[in-house]
Length: 180
Image (tube, rainbow, N blue to C red):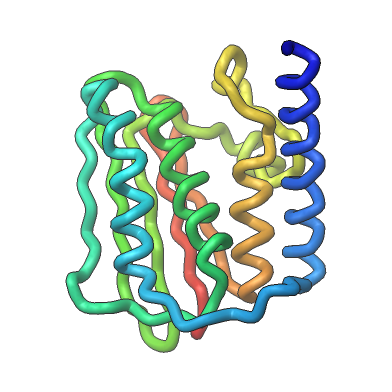
């Protein structure tokens, strides 16, 4: 039983690493489709809201009711938003806050996930998108070190931009811009 479980976990790591490589190379066998990023972000936020609530973390969403159209791949965008929210919930202590914002900016889509968590040091920010990198605050937390690498690869797949503003002990904000 344990061997099967470990085998599945290892296979998932191999699959994620291959997906990251494909993203960086700009390859995807599935054609893009017209998506509503606002509706997609609301769906993903609903998944992580329960985790935030169980830690007594305030969770706010600033997502327009109107559609925010984007031609892309649903699974990639769900992974992007999901990984950022997963990290925010994981690294924000009880009583903190998380926010998710989605908006149309010029000819693109802007997503921002901010939190009042432990923050990321400047030297860790320089390497945080590398595969299997786990920051000092991740010790003892579940994870593979592939989440931010996946996020970065998806942003690069769409020729977008990602910025991180973080202060240790004060929180982190990831801002993603995806051009249309």
